[in-house]
Amino acid sequence: MSRTVADVLVGVLEQVGVRHIFGLIGDSLNPLADAVRRSRIEWIGVRHEEGAALAASGQAKLTGLLSVCAGTTGPGSTHLVAGLYEASRDHAPVLALSGDMPRKMHGTDYIQTTEPDLLFRDVSLYTQTVSSPAQAPGAIHQAIAAAYSGRGVAHLTLPQDVIAAKADSGVSSISTLKPRPELAASATDVTEIARRLDEAGSVVIMCGAGCHGAAEELRVLSDRLKAPLVHSVKGKDIMSYDDPRWMGGVGMIGTKAVYNAVMQCDLLLMLGTDYPYSEFLPHKGSVIQVDDRAHVLGRRAPTALGVVGSVRPTLEILLRKVASKNDTKLWDQVTKERRKWDDMLDKQADPARSLDRTFPQAVARAVSDLAKRDAVFTLDTGLNTLWSANWIRQSGSQRIIGSFNNAAVGTALGQANGVQALDRSRQVIALCGDGGFNMLMCEFLTAVQHKLPVKVVIYNNSAFGLIPLEAEAAGLPAYREAIEFPNPDFCALARACGGHGFRATTQDELHDKINEAFRIEGPAIVDCVVAADEMPNFPHLELDKIGHYALAKIKEVALAVAGP
Image (cartoon, rainbow, N blue to C red; front, top):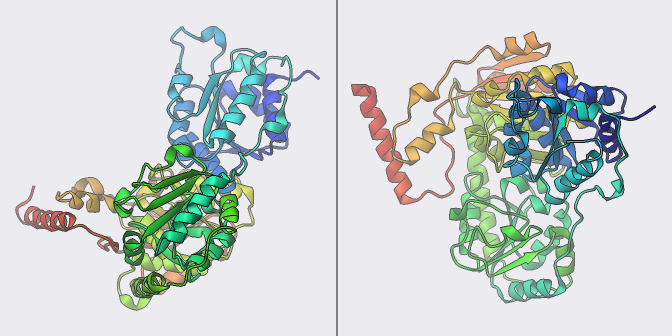
């Protein structure tokens, strides 16, 4: 039997280990669908193409392996783009496939016409239209290689007549299509890191996503240098929250103890992180940064030494060179401050704090306490991110992913579906703001149809909660009419979709409803009605920001009295 271009493409995806394609079938993708139907790959039909891109992004973020999404001609492709920024900004290898009209229709202003190579250019490392069967093998190989080597999005446009045509040949050199290997820093650079560490008094080690897989090396280095380990939110899940070395996060998703430590230490060692908020990093040049991406070195804080290398193999060499330290003054100070901060978090999450209101901190803590030890949390963007990331007490074997660089609202459920498809027996929990869930609630239907037992926990405050804080930080009164909104009955929605729905309106109901949802088979929504006026903690607040908040509150009171 002769093979089509679609058969060749799907065969390559099988060989490199792709297990799912997330997408919607349209006429231009029918040849691809037919090839998938005859393969071992599972087609997961979504309700919106953005949900397909998010599912592939979440899967690739978790595994570091190639994931695939697809959309058909015109609008089907444009819908993909928004979700693909998740993979692009969080450096996850995703192959996006977009259908296209037959070539004879090109250039005639035909229905659903777009220019896909232009459309996908900003979000993709590689984008190419497969214009002939002879071109297909090389373009397929190049796309997958680009996604892996650049850790991002590659895109292929597939005209219907091309992918339905007989293939001229197969794709060669498939064994080269694999994740980028770890790279140790040079011996000279590691020696220089060791020298600077030996000369420094107090050291703090900041750990980002690039530290995954290096937990043991980090512990040994921390013990040897008496250096607190702090983390970006993308690195939070590397170790258990109660590891004495793991002092907490940096910035808004962080602690005052960590902010003080970073600002007061003699040397900050940044490992595998491109943390973007420079105001929470030292302003003097006492920073060493190690990352396998040369272009990120030194761009966030004045850096004395930038070293290209993957964290784990670089630390293996460094541990053979660096000397031990005995001074525990900074360590003891940070530990003491960290305990005070943790006590404050515990009090804010205590269900006994109020008899008639449920606070969002209590929701996050209840989810954390009831989750399985190997659960995966997907976090949405907004004020709910602060509640989830600050109050979840991770086990060290759990994973936490979110829209941490793209910071897009409405992404948690789609990413959760992609993660859940990998292992339907693993607990996957999507923590969503109500505004974000409303954006792509249709993807709950995807979970139900494909038997993806995702548990969705909604912080229901009937508003985009972070927007008022951002306005007030600028000294402006919050525009409530544009921020607040009515919500549907989320429990009724869950049942109408074929899933399970639970609602917690009081502290007494919270633990039981979440526990019941986690125990039940199949997808479930837990609607947690929370106080809308709860303020997050600010590890560091500059004086001008305090003035802006005060001014905004005065304006809000005046508007309430006098009207707009």
